[in-house]
Image (cartoon, rainbow, N blue to C red; front, side, top):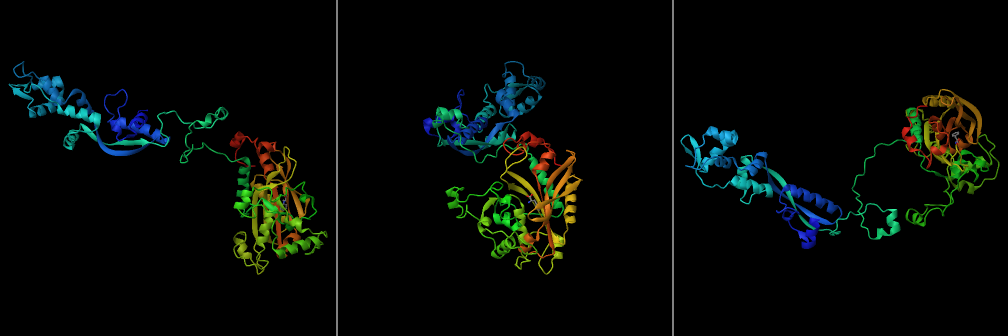
Length: 536
Ligand code: PHE
C-alpha cells in the first residue's frame, strides 16, 4: 500500500531506500527493509500494477561483536567509563579493570584508549584523562546498522572490516514506476470465473488475474494405464517377442473396397449392410472451415479408386471367378467399392499391408518400402520377389451394434497375420497355442467356422483359468486364394490370420461384468488405479 500510495502521489519512486515505512521514523535503508519491499514489488508486478528496476549495491552488516558494540559502546569507551577521572578517586588496577569490564574488553580497550589519550597511568592504576569522549566506533556502527554504509567512506569501512565488526554484503534497491494495471487498491484479482459472477453480472466489473502460461503446473502424483491398455501392452509384447512387426492402423475410415471387396466379401454380404456398418455421409459432416483451410478433400463423398489393374482382378474374381474359383457370379457395383465407412475389422489394414507385401511379386520396384520380415525373410527371397512377413495390430474397429452390457459400437481387435511359403493350418493352430500360452492360457480348442475371406476358418476357444470354462476368444483362418492371388502373391504362398477381441479377455481378467464400467463415462478411476498387471 505504501508503494502504491507513493506512486499515486509522485508517479515514480526513484529510490526505495527513501520510503518511510509507517510506524518507523527513519527511511527503510536497511537490506532487511529492501527485501521486504522486493516481496511487495514482485506481488504487484505479477498483477501488472507496477514496473521496477533493480540496482545492485555493496552494503554492510554488523557482526555479532559489531552489534554488541552498537548497543554497549566500544571496548575503549567501556574501559574509559569504568575509570575515575584523574584526582577524583583511587586509580583502578589492571586486575580490577578486568573484573569490571571482562578480560577481552580490558585487553583490547586499554590499548585503544591509551592511543586516543582517553586514559593514563597513575601509580599502579589507571585514570581518565579526557573529560568527555566521542565513541566514533559506536557511532559508525549505528550508522551502518541503519543505512548499510558510512557517509565518511571506504577507508573507515575497511578499518571496521579488518576489526571484524562488519561484513560486506551484496544489497539491492529499486526504482519503481506505475504498471499498466496501476491502482491504489490492492484488492486481489479474481482467479476463476464462477457461476455466481455470471448470474450476478459481477464478471463485468471484476479484474481477473492474467494466465501465467509459463507456470509449470502441479506435478501429478501418479498415473495408471487403463485396463485395456495394460492388456494391449501385454499382447503387444508377446507379438514383438515372437518377431512380429506392428502394422500402421491409423485410418479408422476405409473404403468398401479395402474393408470388404479386397477380402473377397461378396457385395451382397449382410456384414456390409447399414445394419452392421457405419457409412460416412460425405461433405456434410465437416465444418466448412475445415474443408477450406485444411484440404479440399477433407471430407470427400467417396474414396479414390485403387490401382486399376488390381481393381480389375478383384472385380473379375468376384463376378466371374478365377484362380480355381467360380466367384460369386453376381453383378458388380463400382459404387459399393467407393463407399466410405468406419472399418468393421482391422483385417482392412491387413489387406493394405498384404497388398504392399506383394508389390515386388507384381514386378513393382519397391525395395525397402515393404513391411519388415525378420532376418530369415531376406534369405528366403526368391526370384519371384516374395519375402515372408509376420505382422500384427491392436486397434479400434466400429460396428453398428445394439449396445448392451457386453457390446459397444466401437471396440478393439487384436490381429495377427503370417505370410510364408507352404504354411498349413497346423502352423496357425501351433501359433495360437504358443500365443495363448504366453498369456498364461494353456488350453485352447478350435471349432470349424465360416469366413468369406478364409478357408478353412476356425473359431478359437480358450479354457479360462479364472472362469473355469471354455470362452470364445476369436476367429481365424487361412486367407483364400481369391484374396491373395489378385494381390500378386505366388501360388505357393500361404497367409494365415486371426483376430481376437481385446475387451473380452480384459473383462474376464479384471472380473468386469458390464462393459460400460470399462469404457465410457461410467468408468471407475479407482478400478483403473487398482487393477494389477495383466497376467492371465
Ligand atoms: N476379421 C475377423 C473378425 O473380425 C478376424 C479374422 C482375421 C479372421 C484374420 C480370419 C483372419 O472377426
